[in-house]
Image (cartoon, rainbow, N blue to C red; front, side, top):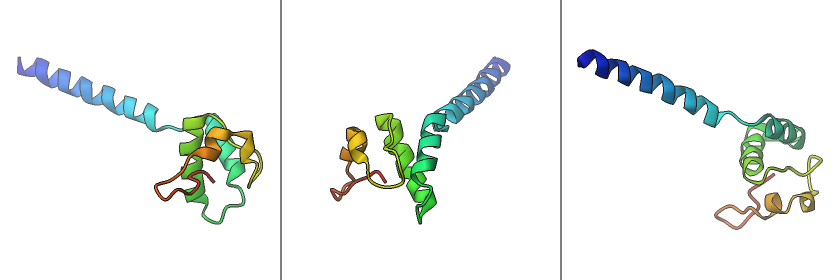
Length: 88
């Protein structure tokens, strides 16, 4: 009985860790679009983080490195807790 429990526990751990890797991986679409969007950002890591969050939620990123947010209303309308634009 103990062997079955240990086997089940080990299997669950392996399965959950592989699922965690899948859920934390960014999509190649968002990685590419946000890389272009944040190309000239002073704080590259922060730009990529928030752009990635916005892209995953909205499934779009405006063209260029600044502005053009009318191309993606969802991206444009996301706000942080202070009421400012969340997306770079």
